[in-house]
Length: 101
Image (cartoon, rainbow, N blue to C red):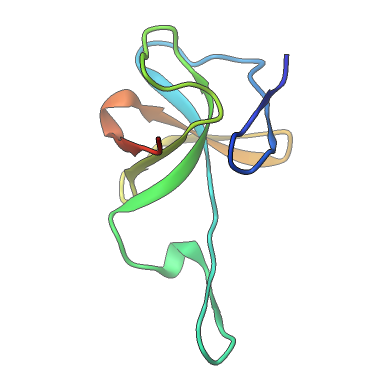
């Protein structure tokens, strides 16, 4: 059954589930445009957190569901993999900083 993100109305594929206390996310890329029209990609901006879209969650994780937007640490290296030509990350629940209400 497909799940849709609340804010972006994009389909979230939940055909797999991480184990333990982990969350599968897709990084939401944001670009900022400066006055001169120059686009600055998300990875060039400073800051300690990145916004992610939750794709699926492990059974032991409570309070976060597929389609939620969460913020996690930027500098940590997560397990990454490609599924359906999109990059996904497996994030430990302990590294989640905040959830958008």
